[in-house]
Image (cartoon, rainbow, N blue to C red; front, side):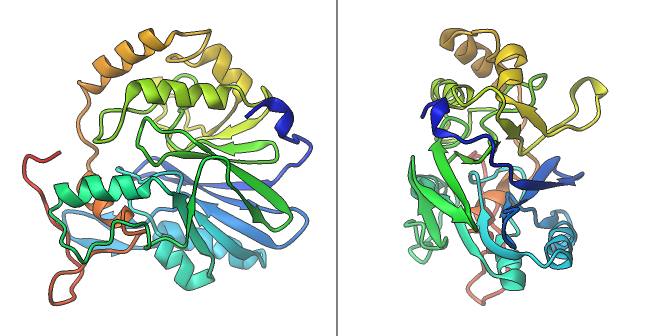
Length: 294
């Protein structure tokens, strides 16, 4: 995908919502020429120790959409998150819209279906989602055309969503001073991640990039917006022409030092089901804890 494919004169309205517990940024992206919008990477609140789920973060998004008389058309997952739970079904129940993710969700479902010893009732065909995207697919948010770019590496089902002068990069990239996301989860691959990042860096230099996470390295304030040009020049992992070999070595060594995300066990069970909490045989919401499997 080359720079000339993108019209940077088209400027969607983007509103960010930062979740302080998981350091996740969710977005409402709205068509300035209509009342249609989409939500990208929503968050459902969980107190894992207490086994309690709430929707304070999602309610902020609902209030924003309702107060501006917007119509929710899409609820987009840039990938299967391992560090927070999706609020997609809650938003859909409140506001409607279709839940979309990469068609590679089926690979992720197969991998983690085995890890969590899921039975045959757990469908591994992506049918929990309303739309499955392949590389190069397009969809619309009102009058806005959105194109999707497959960016595997962090997970097999990662995708970047490009609309006008904006790209939502999920965990394919972090802010320049934070580098990139890990690639050591089952199905992840550091070499693939490097190749995927190059796809993003071939987008127009002035394109705005919106992150899914930021952790404020070196005690700086939380940030979530940068540009392709800034990433190319300054990203500490892939900027200034860093080689694939150097990146893979750095990423592999760094990943070996990282602890598992605190919410990975509930997140994977919920997010492979499009945000639905699994139930036990009696129909009660319930989660499994696999031992020595991750």
